[in-house]
Image (tube, rainbow, N blue to C red; front, side, top):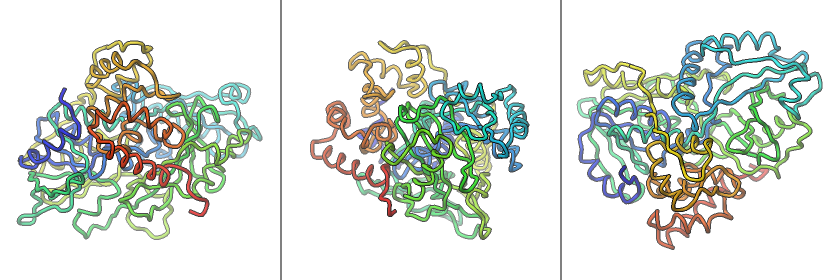
Length: 528
Protein backbone atom coordinates (compact mmCIF):
# COMPACT_ATOMS: atom_id res chain seq x y z
CA UNK A 1 0.00 0.00 0.00
CA UNK A 2 1.54 3.31 -1.11
CA UNK A 3 2.16 6.09 1.37
CA UNK A 4 -0.56 8.71 0.88
CA UNK A 5 0.88 11.80 2.56
CA UNK A 6 1.95 15.38 1.93
CA UNK A 7 5.30 14.37 0.41
CA UNK A 8 3.50 12.08 -2.07
CA UNK A 9 1.02 14.87 -2.81
CA UNK A 10 3.78 17.37 -3.65
CA UNK A 11 5.34 14.92 -6.11
CA UNK A 12 2.07 13.69 -7.58
CA UNK A 13 0.15 16.93 -8.15
CA UNK A 14 2.01 18.13 -11.30
CA UNK A 15 1.91 14.64 -12.78
CA UNK A 16 -1.81 14.23 -12.07
CA UNK A 17 -2.51 17.63 -13.63
CA UNK A 18 -0.72 16.52 -16.81
CA UNK A 19 -2.96 13.49 -17.35
CA UNK A 20 -6.14 13.32 -19.40
CA UNK A 21 -9.06 12.18 -17.24
CA UNK A 22 -12.39 10.58 -18.02
CA UNK A 23 -13.90 12.17 -14.91
CA UNK A 24 -12.82 14.75 -12.34
CA UNK A 25 -14.95 15.01 -9.22
CA UNK A 26 -15.01 18.33 -7.38
CA UNK A 27 -15.75 17.99 -3.67
CA UNK A 28 -14.32 15.65 -1.04
CA UNK A 29 -17.38 14.95 1.09
CA UNK A 30 -19.35 11.72 1.13
CA UNK A 31 -21.09 12.46 -2.19
CA UNK A 32 -17.85 13.15 -4.04
CA UNK A 33 -16.15 10.15 -2.44
CA UNK A 34 -19.05 7.93 -3.52
CA UNK A 35 -18.85 9.15 -7.13
CA UNK A 36 -15.10 8.49 -7.23
CA UNK A 37 -15.68 5.01 -5.77
CA UNK A 38 -18.24 4.01 -8.37
CA UNK A 39 -16.21 5.45 -11.27
CA UNK A 40 -12.99 3.78 -10.16
CA UNK A 41 -14.55 0.34 -9.82
CA UNK A 42 -15.66 0.61 -13.47
CA UNK A 43 -12.16 1.40 -14.66
CA UNK A 44 -12.70 5.09 -15.38
CA UNK A 45 -9.62 7.32 -15.18
CA UNK A 46 -10.89 9.45 -12.34
CA UNK A 47 -9.60 12.09 -9.92
CA UNK A 48 -11.18 13.91 -6.96
CA UNK A 49 -10.19 17.43 -5.89
CA UNK A 50 -11.18 18.95 -2.54
CA UNK A 51 -10.62 22.64 -1.78
CA UNK A 52 -9.92 22.19 1.95
CA UNK A 53 -9.78 18.75 3.53
CA UNK A 54 -11.71 15.55 2.92
CA UNK A 55 -15.02 15.74 4.80
CA UNK A 56 -14.19 19.31 5.87
CA UNK A 57 -17.69 20.59 5.15
CA UNK A 58 -20.97 18.92 5.96
CA UNK A 59 -19.55 15.39 5.94
CA UNK A 60 -17.61 15.78 9.19
CA UNK A 61 -20.25 17.89 10.91
CA UNK A 62 -23.46 15.97 10.37
CA UNK A 63 -25.61 14.34 13.03
CA UNK A 64 -23.64 11.08 12.46
CA UNK A 65 -26.82 9.11 11.76
CA UNK A 66 -27.22 6.53 9.02
CA UNK A 67 -30.99 6.33 8.96
CA UNK A 68 -33.97 5.90 6.73
CA UNK A 69 -35.46 9.26 7.53
CA UNK A 70 -38.59 8.18 9.36
CA UNK A 71 -40.02 11.69 9.27
CA UNK A 72 -39.90 11.68 5.46
CA UNK A 73 -42.74 9.13 5.45
CA UNK A 74 -44.99 11.72 7.07
CA UNK A 75 -43.96 14.18 4.33
CA UNK A 76 -44.89 11.67 1.63
CA UNK A 77 -41.29 11.13 0.48
CA UNK A 78 -41.74 7.37 0.17
CA UNK A 79 -38.98 6.69 -2.31
CA UNK A 80 -36.41 8.61 -0.28
CA UNK A 81 -37.34 6.64 2.83
CA UNK A 82 -37.31 3.29 1.03
CA UNK A 83 -33.92 3.90 -0.55
CA UNK A 84 -32.48 5.14 2.72
CA UNK A 85 -33.66 2.11 4.68
CA UNK A 86 -32.19 -0.28 2.14
CA UNK A 87 -28.87 1.55 2.01
CA UNK A 88 -28.75 1.63 5.81
CA UNK A 89 -29.07 -2.15 5.87
CA UNK A 90 -26.35 -2.47 3.22
CA UNK A 91 -23.93 -0.30 5.19
CA UNK A 92 -24.61 -2.16 8.44
CA UNK A 93 -23.69 -5.37 6.66
CA UNK A 94 -20.64 -4.08 4.79
CA UNK A 95 -18.99 -1.82 7.36
CA UNK A 96 -19.44 -3.18 10.90
CA UNK A 97 -17.32 -1.18 13.31
CA UNK A 98 -17.79 1.94 11.20
CA UNK A 99 -21.56 1.86 10.75
CA UNK A 100 -23.22 0.32 13.80
CA UNK A 101 -26.83 -0.21 14.89
CA UNK A 102 -28.26 2.25 17.38
CA UNK A 103 -31.54 1.99 19.22
CA UNK A 104 -33.83 5.03 19.10
CA UNK A 105 -36.52 5.75 21.68
CA UNK A 106 -39.56 7.97 21.13
CA UNK A 107 -41.29 8.73 24.43
CA UNK A 108 -45.07 9.19 24.29
CA UNK A 109 -46.87 11.71 26.51
CA UNK A 110 -50.58 12.12 27.16
CA UNK A 111 -51.98 14.44 24.50
CA UNK A 112 -48.66 14.57 22.65
CA UNK A 113 -47.91 13.83 19.01
CA UNK A 114 -47.18 11.30 17.71
CA UNK A 115 -49.08 8.93 19.93
CA UNK A 116 -48.12 5.24 20.27
CA UNK A 117 -50.60 4.03 17.65
CA UNK A 118 -49.74 6.60 15.01
CA UNK A 119 -46.02 6.16 15.57
CA UNK A 120 -46.36 2.38 15.55
CA UNK A 121 -48.14 2.60 12.20
CA UNK A 122 -45.32 4.68 10.71
CA UNK A 123 -42.75 2.21 12.05
CA UNK A 124 -44.65 -0.72 10.57
CA UNK A 125 -44.16 0.87 7.14
CA UNK A 126 -40.56 1.68 7.99
CA UNK A 127 -39.83 -1.91 8.99
CA UNK A 128 -41.60 -3.28 5.92
CA UNK A 129 -39.14 -1.35 3.75
CA UNK A 130 -36.24 -2.90 5.69
CA UNK A 131 -37.76 -6.39 5.48
CA UNK A 132 -37.70 -7.00 9.23
CA UNK A 133 -39.50 -5.84 12.36
CA UNK A 134 -37.29 -3.45 14.30
CA UNK A 135 -39.61 -1.75 16.78
CA UNK A 136 -41.25 -2.49 20.11
CA UNK A 137 -43.51 -0.52 22.47
CA UNK A 138 -42.54 -0.30 26.15
CA UNK A 139 -45.13 0.67 28.78
CA UNK A 140 -44.10 3.13 31.47
CA UNK A 141 -42.75 0.63 34.01
CA UNK A 142 -40.50 -1.04 31.44
CA UNK A 143 -39.46 2.27 29.88
CA UNK A 144 -38.04 3.44 33.22
CA UNK A 145 -35.44 0.68 33.03
CA UNK A 146 -34.71 1.34 29.36
CA UNK A 147 -34.48 5.11 29.68
CA UNK A 148 -33.84 6.38 33.21
CA UNK A 149 -33.97 10.14 33.67
CA UNK A 150 -36.71 10.90 31.15
CA UNK A 151 -39.30 13.49 32.09
CA UNK A 152 -42.14 11.44 33.61
CA UNK A 153 -44.98 13.95 33.83
CA UNK A 154 -47.82 12.59 31.65
CA UNK A 155 -45.46 9.88 30.29
CA UNK A 156 -47.35 6.89 28.88
CA UNK A 157 -44.48 4.76 27.58
CA UNK A 158 -42.10 4.71 24.66
CA UNK A 159 -41.37 3.03 21.35
CA UNK A 160 -37.91 1.72 20.55
CA UNK A 161 -36.75 1.23 16.96
CA UNK A 162 -33.40 0.68 15.24
CA UNK A 163 -31.35 2.87 12.94
CA UNK A 164 -27.58 3.32 12.77
CA UNK A 165 -24.75 5.68 13.66
CA UNK A 166 -21.30 6.33 12.18
CA UNK A 167 -18.22 8.51 12.32
CA UNK A 168 -19.03 10.51 9.21
CA UNK A 169 -15.48 11.72 8.52
CA UNK A 170 -14.05 8.19 8.82
CA UNK A 171 -16.77 6.97 6.47
CA UNK A 172 -15.56 9.43 3.83
CA UNK A 173 -11.95 8.29 4.30
CA UNK A 174 -12.93 4.63 3.93
CA UNK A 175 -14.87 5.27 0.73
CA UNK A 176 -11.96 7.27 -0.71
CA UNK A 177 -9.57 4.48 0.22
CA UNK A 178 -11.73 1.93 -1.59
CA UNK A 179 -11.76 4.17 -4.65
CA UNK A 180 -7.99 4.51 -4.54
CA UNK A 181 -7.71 0.75 -4.29
CA UNK A 182 -9.38 0.57 -7.70
CA UNK A 183 -7.14 3.19 -9.30
CA UNK A 184 -8.90 6.46 -8.44
CA UNK A 185 -6.90 9.39 -7.09
CA UNK A 186 -7.83 12.07 -4.55
CA UNK A 187 -6.18 15.32 -3.46
CA UNK A 188 -7.08 17.80 -0.76
CA UNK A 189 -6.07 21.46 -0.59
CA UNK A 190 -6.83 22.02 -4.29
CA UNK A 191 -9.45 24.71 -4.96
CA UNK A 192 -11.19 24.74 -8.33
CA UNK A 193 -11.56 28.35 -9.49
CA UNK A 194 -12.88 28.02 -13.03
CA UNK A 195 -14.41 25.54 -15.48
CA UNK A 196 -12.91 26.34 -18.92
CA UNK A 197 -15.27 25.83 -21.85
CA UNK A 198 -14.65 25.16 -25.51
CA UNK A 199 -17.59 25.60 -27.88
CA UNK A 200 -19.90 25.76 -24.88
CA UNK A 201 -18.64 22.54 -23.29
CA UNK A 202 -16.71 22.17 -20.04
CA UNK A 203 -13.36 20.59 -20.90
CA UNK A 204 -11.63 20.51 -17.52
CA UNK A 205 -10.83 22.96 -14.80
CA UNK A 206 -8.37 25.46 -13.36
CA UNK A 207 -7.37 24.88 -9.75
CA UNK A 208 -5.11 26.51 -7.17
CA UNK A 209 -2.92 24.47 -4.85
CA UNK A 210 -3.45 25.94 -1.37
CA UNK A 211 -0.09 24.59 -0.16
CA UNK A 212 2.22 25.97 -2.86
CA UNK A 213 0.10 28.71 -4.40
CA UNK A 214 0.60 27.24 -7.87
CA UNK A 215 -2.21 27.09 -10.43
CA UNK A 216 -2.80 23.95 -12.47
CA UNK A 217 -4.89 23.16 -15.52
CA UNK A 218 -6.66 19.78 -15.62
CA UNK A 219 -8.31 18.27 -18.67
CA UNK A 220 -11.26 15.93 -18.34
CA UNK A 221 -13.95 14.53 -20.60
CA UNK A 222 -16.56 15.30 -17.97
CA UNK A 223 -16.64 17.02 -14.57
CA UNK A 224 -18.91 16.09 -11.65
CA UNK A 225 -19.58 18.72 -9.00
CA UNK A 226 -20.43 17.41 -5.52
CA UNK A 227 -19.64 20.53 -3.57
CA UNK A 228 -22.71 20.70 -1.34
CA UNK A 229 -23.51 24.22 -0.17
CA UNK A 230 -20.84 25.55 -2.57
CA UNK A 231 -22.60 24.17 -5.67
CA UNK A 232 -23.72 27.54 -7.01
CA UNK A 233 -20.20 28.93 -7.33
CA UNK A 234 -19.07 27.22 -10.55
CA UNK A 235 -22.45 26.46 -12.08
CA UNK A 236 -23.75 28.59 -14.92
CA UNK A 237 -26.43 31.02 -13.77
CA UNK A 238 -30.06 30.77 -14.77
CA UNK A 239 -31.46 27.77 -12.91
CA UNK A 240 -34.69 28.37 -11.00
CA UNK A 241 -33.71 26.10 -8.14
CA UNK A 242 -30.90 27.13 -5.84
CA UNK A 243 -28.99 25.90 -2.81
CA UNK A 244 -30.36 27.16 0.51
CA UNK A 245 -27.59 26.67 3.10
CA UNK A 246 -29.11 25.53 6.38
CA UNK A 247 -27.06 25.22 9.55
CA UNK A 248 -27.42 22.31 11.94
CA UNK A 249 -25.52 22.68 15.22
CA UNK A 250 -24.72 20.27 18.04
CA UNK A 251 -23.49 20.17 21.62
CA UNK A 252 -21.19 17.42 22.88
CA UNK A 253 -21.23 16.43 26.56
CA UNK A 254 -19.03 14.01 28.50
CA UNK A 255 -20.75 10.64 28.52
CA UNK A 256 -20.72 10.46 32.33
CA UNK A 257 -22.60 13.77 32.59
CA UNK A 258 -25.64 12.50 30.70
CA UNK A 259 -25.24 8.76 30.15
CA UNK A 260 -27.61 7.39 27.49
CA UNK A 261 -27.57 3.96 25.87
CA UNK A 262 -30.02 4.90 23.10
CA UNK A 263 -30.83 7.86 20.92
CA UNK A 264 -33.84 9.79 22.20
CA UNK A 265 -36.01 11.51 19.65
CA UNK A 266 -38.55 14.14 20.69
CA UNK A 267 -40.23 17.34 19.55
CA UNK A 268 -38.83 20.61 20.87
CA UNK A 269 -41.45 22.51 22.87
CA UNK A 270 -40.41 25.78 21.22
CA UNK A 271 -41.09 24.92 17.57
CA UNK A 272 -42.13 21.24 17.40
CA UNK A 273 -38.94 20.33 15.49
CA UNK A 274 -37.43 16.86 16.06
CA UNK A 275 -34.39 16.93 18.34
CA UNK A 276 -32.06 14.08 19.38
CA UNK A 277 -29.98 13.19 22.39
CA UNK A 278 -27.74 10.24 21.55
CA UNK A 279 -24.49 8.44 22.42
CA UNK A 280 -21.50 8.85 20.11
CA UNK A 281 -17.87 7.86 20.64
CA UNK A 282 -18.37 7.54 24.40
CA UNK A 283 -19.88 11.04 24.67
CA UNK A 284 -23.44 12.38 24.44
CA UNK A 285 -24.66 14.59 21.60
CA UNK A 286 -27.57 17.05 21.65
CA UNK A 287 -28.74 18.17 18.21
CA UNK A 288 -29.74 19.57 15.93
CA UNK A 289 -30.88 23.04 14.91
CA UNK A 290 -32.16 24.06 11.47
CA UNK A 291 -31.47 27.69 10.58
CA UNK A 292 -30.52 29.68 7.51
CA UNK A 293 -26.75 29.99 7.38
CA UNK A 294 -25.82 33.48 6.24
CA UNK A 295 -22.15 33.42 7.25
CA UNK A 296 -19.19 33.07 4.89
CA UNK A 297 -19.13 29.51 3.56
CA UNK A 298 -15.33 29.58 3.33
CA UNK A 299 -14.88 29.59 7.09
CA UNK A 300 -15.81 26.84 9.49
CA UNK A 301 -19.44 27.12 10.50
CA UNK A 302 -20.01 27.77 14.20
CA UNK A 303 -22.88 27.51 16.62
CA UNK A 304 -24.57 30.67 17.83
CA UNK A 305 -25.46 31.48 21.43
CA UNK A 306 -29.15 31.29 20.48
CA UNK A 307 -28.64 27.74 19.23
CA UNK A 308 -26.81 26.78 22.43
CA UNK A 309 -29.77 27.97 24.49
CA UNK A 310 -32.19 26.14 22.17
CA UNK A 311 -30.36 22.82 22.55
CA UNK A 312 -29.90 23.19 26.31
CA UNK A 313 -33.63 23.89 26.57
CA UNK A 314 -34.31 20.71 24.62
CA UNK A 315 -32.15 18.71 27.01
CA UNK A 316 -33.86 20.26 30.05
CA UNK A 317 -37.22 19.45 28.50
CA UNK A 318 -36.49 15.74 28.14
CA UNK A 319 -33.96 15.16 30.97
CA UNK A 320 -34.92 17.76 33.62
CA UNK A 321 -33.12 16.01 36.47
CA UNK A 322 -29.74 16.12 34.70
CA UNK A 323 -29.56 19.94 34.97
CA UNK A 324 -27.23 20.25 31.99
CA UNK A 325 -25.75 23.72 31.50
CA UNK A 326 -23.08 25.52 29.50
CA UNK A 327 -20.34 24.40 31.88
CA UNK A 328 -21.02 20.77 30.93
CA UNK A 329 -20.34 21.25 27.21
CA UNK A 330 -17.11 19.66 25.92
CA UNK A 331 -17.31 21.01 22.38
CA UNK A 332 -19.69 22.03 19.63
CA UNK A 333 -19.92 21.60 15.90
CA UNK A 334 -22.04 23.13 13.19
CA UNK A 335 -22.56 21.82 9.67
CA UNK A 336 -24.19 23.42 6.65
CA UNK A 337 -26.76 21.32 4.82
CA UNK A 338 -27.03 21.89 1.06
CA UNK A 339 -30.83 21.92 0.75
CA UNK A 340 -32.32 22.53 -2.70
CA UNK A 341 -34.97 25.26 -2.62
CA UNK A 342 -37.31 26.65 -5.26
CA UNK A 343 -37.12 30.02 -3.52
CA UNK A 344 -40.66 30.05 -2.15
CA UNK A 345 -40.87 33.09 0.10
CA UNK A 346 -41.47 32.54 3.79
CA UNK A 347 -40.88 28.78 3.80
CA UNK A 348 -39.38 27.61 7.09
CA UNK A 349 -36.05 25.78 6.90
CA UNK A 350 -37.56 22.58 8.32
CA UNK A 351 -40.28 22.64 5.66
CA UNK A 352 -37.81 22.40 2.78
CA UNK A 353 -37.72 18.97 1.18
CA UNK A 354 -34.52 16.94 1.43
CA UNK A 355 -34.68 15.57 -2.11
CA UNK A 356 -31.63 16.02 -4.34
CA UNK A 357 -31.35 17.48 -7.83
CA UNK A 358 -28.98 17.06 -10.77
CA UNK A 359 -28.09 20.03 -12.95
CA UNK A 360 -26.41 19.15 -16.26
CA UNK A 361 -24.65 21.15 -18.93
CA UNK A 362 -22.30 19.92 -21.67
CA UNK A 363 -19.25 18.45 -19.95
CA UNK A 364 -20.47 18.95 -16.39
CA UNK A 365 -22.99 17.41 -13.99
CA UNK A 366 -23.75 19.03 -10.63
CA UNK A 367 -25.30 17.18 -7.70
CA UNK A 368 -27.26 19.37 -5.31
CA UNK A 369 -28.70 18.13 -2.03
CA UNK A 370 -28.90 14.53 -0.90
CA UNK A 371 -28.36 12.43 2.23
CA UNK A 372 -25.36 10.72 3.73
CA UNK A 373 -27.16 7.37 3.92
CA UNK A 374 -27.89 7.22 0.19
CA UNK A 375 -24.48 8.33 -1.05
CA UNK A 376 -24.04 5.18 -3.17
CA UNK A 377 -27.32 5.70 -5.04
CA UNK A 378 -26.55 9.38 -5.56
CA UNK A 379 -23.14 8.45 -6.95
CA UNK A 380 -24.70 6.05 -9.45
CA UNK A 381 -27.19 8.67 -10.57
CA UNK A 382 -24.43 11.21 -11.16
CA UNK A 383 -22.28 8.63 -12.92
CA UNK A 384 -25.13 7.68 -15.27
CA UNK A 385 -25.60 11.35 -16.18
CA UNK A 386 -21.86 11.63 -16.85
CA UNK A 387 -21.85 8.38 -18.82
CA UNK A 388 -24.54 9.69 -21.16
CA UNK A 389 -22.19 12.48 -22.16
CA UNK A 390 -19.38 9.97 -22.78
CA UNK A 391 -21.46 7.48 -24.73
CA UNK A 392 -21.21 4.90 -21.94
CA UNK A 393 -23.69 3.08 -19.75
CA UNK A 394 -23.62 2.47 -16.01
CA UNK A 395 -25.42 -0.47 -14.44
CA UNK A 396 -25.88 -1.16 -10.74
CA UNK A 397 -24.89 -4.74 -10.09
CA UNK A 398 -25.05 -4.25 -6.33
CA UNK A 399 -21.28 -4.56 -5.85
CA UNK A 400 -20.03 -3.82 -2.36
CA UNK A 401 -18.76 -0.35 -1.54
CA UNK A 402 -16.34 -1.83 1.01
CA UNK A 403 -14.20 -4.83 0.21
CA UNK A 404 -14.47 -7.58 2.84
CA UNK A 405 -11.41 -7.48 5.10
CA UNK A 406 -9.73 -10.76 6.08
CA UNK A 407 -9.88 -11.34 9.85
CA UNK A 408 -6.88 -9.84 11.58
CA UNK A 409 -6.28 -10.11 15.30
CA UNK A 410 -4.69 -6.91 16.55
CA UNK A 411 -2.27 -7.41 19.45
CA UNK A 412 -3.76 -6.60 22.84
CA UNK A 413 -7.17 -5.56 21.50
CA UNK A 414 -10.52 -7.13 22.29
CA UNK A 415 -12.71 -8.55 19.50
CA UNK A 416 -14.88 -5.44 19.72
CA UNK A 417 -11.87 -3.16 19.33
CA UNK A 418 -10.61 -5.22 16.39
CA UNK A 419 -14.01 -4.87 14.74
CA UNK A 420 -13.89 -1.12 15.23
CA UNK A 421 -10.42 -0.80 13.72
CA UNK A 422 -11.27 -3.00 10.74
CA UNK A 423 -14.34 -0.89 10.02
CA UNK A 424 -12.46 2.37 10.22
CA UNK A 425 -9.22 1.54 8.46
CA UNK A 426 -9.91 -1.11 5.83
CA UNK A 427 -6.81 -1.53 3.68
CA UNK A 428 -4.71 0.25 6.30
CA UNK A 429 -5.36 -2.40 8.92
CA UNK A 430 -2.12 -4.30 8.29
CA UNK A 431 -0.01 -1.18 8.85
CA UNK A 432 -2.08 -0.36 11.94
CA UNK A 433 -1.24 -3.80 13.33
CA UNK A 434 2.47 -3.04 12.86
CA UNK A 435 2.07 0.27 14.67
CA UNK A 436 0.24 -1.40 17.54
CA UNK A 437 3.13 -3.86 17.84
CA UNK A 438 5.49 -0.87 17.98
CA UNK A 439 3.49 1.54 20.13
CA UNK A 440 1.07 -0.69 22.02
CA UNK A 441 -2.70 -0.66 22.08
CA UNK A 442 -3.09 2.25 24.51
CA UNK A 443 -6.05 4.55 24.00
CA UNK A 444 -5.79 8.34 24.07
CA UNK A 445 -7.03 9.28 27.55
CA UNK A 446 -10.61 8.01 27.93
CA UNK A 447 -11.43 7.96 24.21
CA UNK A 448 -11.69 4.88 21.99
CA UNK A 449 -8.94 6.24 19.71
CA UNK A 450 -5.58 4.47 19.83
CA UNK A 451 -2.29 6.33 19.79
CA UNK A 452 -1.40 3.99 16.92
CA UNK A 453 -4.31 5.45 14.91
CA UNK A 454 -2.81 8.92 15.22
CA UNK A 455 0.50 7.57 13.93
CA UNK A 456 -1.25 5.83 11.03
CA UNK A 457 -3.12 8.99 10.05
CA UNK A 458 0.05 11.08 10.20
CA UNK A 459 1.91 8.58 8.02
CA UNK A 460 -0.60 7.81 5.29
CA UNK A 461 -3.92 9.65 5.43
CA UNK A 462 -2.89 12.86 3.65
CA UNK A 463 -2.88 15.14 6.68
CA UNK A 464 -1.97 18.68 5.61
CA UNK A 465 -2.84 20.55 8.81
CA UNK A 466 -3.27 19.79 12.48
CA UNK A 467 -7.05 20.23 12.37
CA UNK A 468 -7.15 17.50 9.68
CA UNK A 469 -5.60 15.13 12.22
CA UNK A 470 -7.58 16.12 15.32
CA UNK A 471 -11.00 17.02 13.91
CA UNK A 472 -11.40 14.58 10.99
CA UNK A 473 -8.86 11.70 10.84
CA UNK A 474 -9.56 11.34 14.56
CA UNK A 475 -12.21 13.18 16.61
CA UNK A 476 -10.00 13.95 19.60
CA UNK A 477 -10.51 17.69 19.14
CA UNK A 478 -14.19 17.18 19.84
CA UNK A 479 -14.01 14.44 22.45
CA UNK A 480 -11.30 15.77 24.78
CA UNK A 481 -11.44 18.98 26.84
CA UNK A 482 -10.23 22.18 25.17
CA UNK A 483 -9.69 20.47 21.85
CA UNK A 484 -7.21 17.94 23.35
CA UNK A 485 -4.84 20.77 24.27
CA UNK A 486 -3.41 18.85 27.23
CA UNK A 487 -2.41 15.96 24.93
CA UNK A 488 -0.68 18.08 22.30
CA UNK A 489 2.88 17.54 23.64
CA UNK A 490 2.52 13.77 23.36
CA UNK A 491 0.76 14.06 19.99
CA UNK A 492 3.67 16.18 18.81
CA UNK A 493 6.23 13.62 19.96
CA UNK A 494 4.38 10.88 18.08
CA UNK A 495 3.35 12.67 14.90
CA UNK A 496 5.70 15.57 14.10
CA UNK A 497 8.39 13.46 12.41
CA UNK A 498 5.77 11.34 10.64
CA UNK A 499 4.23 14.53 9.22
CA UNK A 500 7.63 15.87 8.23
CA UNK A 501 7.10 19.17 10.05
CA UNK A 502 9.84 21.36 11.50
CA UNK A 503 9.55 22.76 15.01
CA UNK A 504 8.48 26.10 13.58
CA UNK A 505 5.82 24.42 11.42
CA UNK A 506 4.43 22.48 14.38
CA UNK A 507 4.26 25.63 16.51
CA UNK A 508 2.45 27.45 13.72
CA UNK A 509 -0.01 24.59 13.19
CA UNK A 510 -0.72 24.26 16.91
CA UNK A 511 -1.41 27.98 17.28
CA UNK A 512 -3.68 27.94 14.22
CA UNK A 513 -5.55 24.83 15.37
CA UNK A 514 -6.24 26.11 18.90
CA UNK A 515 -7.48 29.45 17.51
CA UNK A 516 -9.79 27.58 15.13
CA UNK A 517 -11.09 25.34 17.91
CA UNK A 518 -11.84 28.26 20.22
CA UNK A 519 -13.58 30.18 17.45
CA UNK A 520 -15.69 27.43 15.88
CA UNK A 521 -15.79 24.31 18.07
CA UNK A 522 -16.17 25.67 21.59
CA UNK A 523 -19.04 27.58 23.19
CA UNK A 524 -19.56 31.02 21.63
CA UNK A 525 -19.67 34.26 23.50
CA UNK A 526 -23.20 34.79 24.82
CA UNK A 527 -23.51 37.85 22.60
CA UNK A 528 -23.03 35.87 19.36
